[in-house]
Structures are given as C-alpha cells and as structure tokens.
Image (cartoon, rainbow, N blue to C red; front, side, top):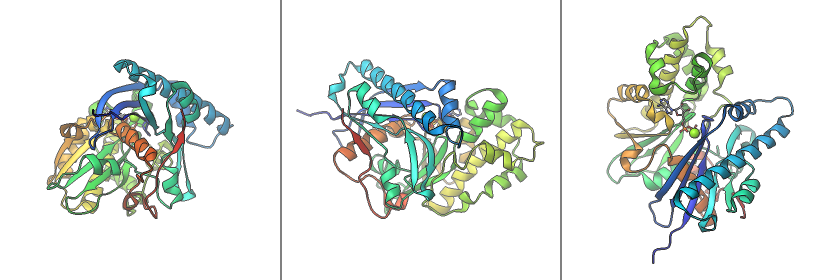
Length: 365
Ligand SMILES: Nc1ncnc2c1ncn2[C@@H]1O[C@H](COP(=O)(O)OP(=O)(O)O)[C@@H](O)[C@H]1O
Ligand SMILES: [Mg+2]
C-alpha cells in the first residue's frame, strides 16, 4: 500500500503579513497539498518584527521574546492545520519552518531567521527543521533564493521556456529554460515598499489590486533615482531584503513635494521594472511567466508586467495546479524532507555557493 510521507511547511516572509502553513504528502515526486492555513500577525507583533530589522535598544533580548511569540503562533498554525484534517502530530515527519528574517547580510557572512524551533518542537510534538539559509552562506552563497530548486522540481516544462516570479515583500525569479540549467535570483522590491507607503498614508497593510497606485501617475525622475540603486544593475547571484529596501531608502529618494498617490504609482512601476528588466536581461527567450506570492493578486501589477513584457504570456502558478499563495510554504516542507533525507537542496548556480549543501538544522520532536 502507498505510504504517505506527511510534512508541514511554515512560511512567514518579508511582507510581515502572517504565517502561511501547509500540510503536504511528499511521498511522490509531485507533492500533494492536503490542507492550507493562514494566520495573520497582529499589529503589535508586526511592528516589533519591523523594529528588529534595525539596531536599537536591547535588541538581543527583544528578538528572543519575539522568537518565542513566533513559535507560539507557528504552533497554533500547526495545531489548526492538523485539526482541519483530524491528523495526529505523531503522523507528521517534520515541520519545515522558514522562520522570520530580521537580518539578511550574506556580505557579512550571516542571515538571521528567528522563531525558536526548540519551543515549536516542544509545543507541537513534531520534529522541526529550520535555519535553511545559513549553510549556503557558509559555503559562500547568498543563502537566497532557495525556492528555485523547488520550482525546478515541480514547474519545469519540457518544451516551454517558463519563468516563475514570486512576488512577496521582495520579488525573486526562477528561469526554467527547456534545454539549459535552472537559474534564479532576487529582482528587487516586491510589495514591501508599496505596503509601507500605503500603511503610512492610508493606514492599510497593502494597496489592494494596486487601486491607489492606479489613481496616481508615475514620476519619471523619482523612478530613475530609485532604479539607479546599484542592486538593480548587479549581476546574479544576488539577494535582497528589508536591509536595503526600507522606508529610509525610500525617503532618501523622495524630493519631499510628491503627491502620495504618485509615489505609490512610481513604487508599483519600480517593482514591475525590476522584474521586467531581470527577465529581459537574464531570461532570454522566456515564453511563459507564472506569478506566485501575494503580489500575484495585484491586478494593476499583472497588467503592467504584461505591457512591459509583450512577448510573454503572463499567468499564475495556480493554473499549473500549484497554489501561488502557498507555494513557498510547500517549498519549505520539501526542504525539510530534503534535509531529513540528507539531500542537498541549494542550487549553487542560483545562490553562488561553492557546492551543493544539505540545508537546515534539525530539532527532534
Ligand atoms: N489583492 C492584493 N492586491 C495587492 N497586493 C496584494 C493583494 N493580496 C496580497 N498582496 C500583497 O502580497 C503581500 C503578501 O504576500 P506574501 O506572498 O505573503 O509575501 P511574503 O512571502 O513576503 O510574506 C502583501 O503584503 C501585499 O503586498
Ligand atoms: Mg507572507
């Protein structure tokens, strides 16, 4: 009889919106999504996580307290996910937990995802695999993006040149040319600058469907100052985060007299230009673009990308049978399985690591 191999994947990304959780059967070469669950952060936790991105008073102590809060939230996600299906914790091989990035500094030899995996293992009674990025950095890589290996596994087509674009807080792409190796890198901001600007001016966590951005006009001089950021011209491997693209960065680029809606329009354009430029320069011959991540819901963004990339068909990964909102969580379930099986999971061509590595640290149940 077919024996399922059940894994849980937990993803909380740079957007700081909340926790995406999936239960998946990974016994087969194509993962089977059994159930999914989303738990948003409350405003207090979100603000503390945002604050921890910058040096501040007593940050070591505060980061550990935030890690404990995250672990409790992760455990709640896991409990609710299992309750949905009536599945016992003892049936789960492991939880793959990305953790919450509060610093990403491969140039200094480290990246930091918090989440207290010991506490999560204790509360859930399930083995936890986490800290997936550090080993790749130890091997000289960027530690990011890690999802291209999973895209390579589940989204390749034998005769179509596909590109997968994940638009979270940061955007990253995976190039899947039919007769050549997979590559990938971070392209620039996804939604994080638009989210921050929207929160400041409208008090809302994101600009739904880019409606506010659409009400403004793109400011060419501001766009040019933003696109002058060296990150955009840097060849891969490259990765980014809130360490670079944050409110202070945006404020530096502003003249100060811009209308808020025009800034939002320009930020949407920046995200789209960052992605389109990356595809034009590094994904020659791309035919089909598949979007995933929360930014794929932004209809204005999708429309603008279609205009900037007239030779490509733009769709979402859901059309290929893989939920775009939960793709990264599924990828981290798979990364946990790779770790337990002792299989390397980084793609050196993507991250720049010197060699393939088994990723992650294992916390027994
Ligand atoms: N309807 C929508 N319109 C515009 N943006 C959206 C919409 N739904 C989600 N988003 C964006 O998606 C983000 C969450 O995406 P997610 O994939 O969870 O990112 P991360 O992995 O960084 O947490 C939100 O912060 C928001 O910017
Ligand atoms: Mg998220």
